[in-house]
Amino acid sequence: MVALGLRRKVSNRFRPGAETSLSERDQRVVWRIAALLLDYPTEQTLGMLDDLRAAAETVPGPAGTNLVSCVDFMQRTPRIELSSLYVETFDLRRRSSLHLSYYAYGDTRNRGMALLRFKNAYRNGGVTLGDHELPDYLPVVLEFAATTDAARGWRLLVEHRAVVEVLRLSLRDADSPFAPVLDALCATLPELDTDDRQKVAKMAAEGPPEEAVGLDTYALDPALNPQVDQYPQMGERR
Image 1 (cartoon, rainbow, N blue to C red):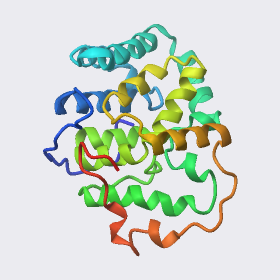
Image 2: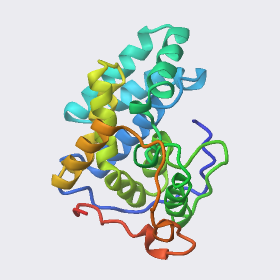
Image 3: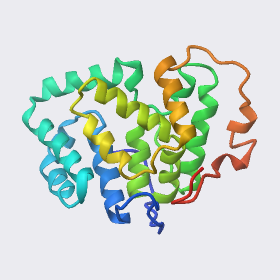
Image 4: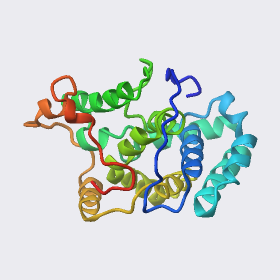
């Protein structure tokens, strides 16, 4: 994921969420490291592990400790074994997909409209996303938030807070060594509210849908509805 196709780095000031004690800098560091650790373990990424560990050690509290835990695991695991575990964890298990819209829409015709929301956020952030990856891929969202547009990236994560929690719980249930990365990510986001908890329970019980009908595609298509990119501000509840 080193070459994401994200161009024109933008420096947007933003206020860290009121519900996290991490600074703006710490949030960005967590997102940047998490983006790399959650992407497929390429030789280039594995060559960066010493630097990633050093950066993670600068993040205070459990967030930094959790990132270091995953880096340590990756450093002591042979590449072939690590690659196999990654594919088994994120590519072969429906409940631990890294594609955020998959949890709500599965592989249905309505998912395409949901993906436009992510594309619209990137476009409004002044960047172009390459064609090699779906825009709802969590490492891409994290990379966007960390290096390009922290405010819009944070809002995308907040809007999908329940999905991130389902992924975290799935990895925890599987005792995955990648679970601490999700713990670190959640430390940068607001606590779950009542609506979030209901969504988590529903998604955990039912899993991604196989088919969906009756969704309002007008509300999801940014070309038809410009309000699709209106997210809560940093520190606000939805």
